[in-house]
Image (tube, rainbow, N blue to C red; front, top):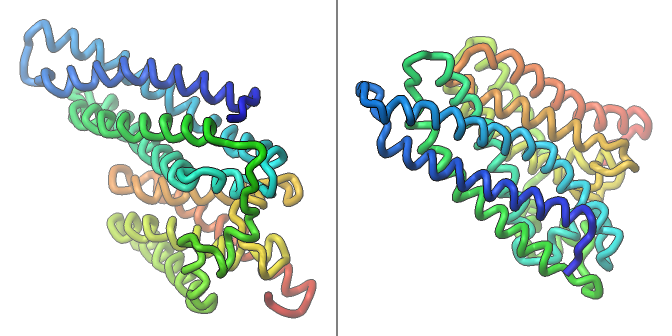
Length: 312
């Protein structure tokens, strides 16, 4: 077990999230089961007041959770200096059996919490609050995922062993790895890149013609295609090494922390692309973010070619 100041900070915040989350869960269940917008019973007015408290707690959790996710990535990088064999956060996550599940849950929860905030915003704008039961039902599901994240995070940090040799990212993200990543190396890069740009072309088409459903679905697919493309193709041009496929190393200072910008643009673009189903005003922000993401990662390929006259 490693108990660094960073891990201790995460433990404390997780505990606070759990306590406040339990309060919000209790109120959410109560509101979901008993709220009736057509009733004038005094209980309904009490539930409406309680809904404001629950909403405030959930918003607080999300507002703190976003920077905490960045702090989590920072903590993984610091721990890579402690664990033998780890070169970045990838090796740290691989130190336990649940590291990959943890990072996946964290990303999923950020998307879902952000969606909850949008749903809540649309709900409070309308004095009839048409989504009040829906948003609290969603939080009940969210709390289960959030609690799973907290428990897995505690297990992951608790089971770190300083004297245990872990794999570096060069081993994890290679064709010889025994993980699911190794199967990605069977994909031809030409096909992968074609799918990437075709996917963005579909996003552009849907944006121009304001086709909400096509735009949302193409953005959902774009999340997966982009992550795979970053690992298999674009990341190698950031590193300027054909054998380096790690999606974590370009979050470090050696690469000017460009990974944070890359992932932020991808999140803003795809998340807002999903919620255009609710509000058309998110079309522009989504498309601009996706466009900047594509231009940024493509720029590394162009710059490398101009410098060296060949592709990797």
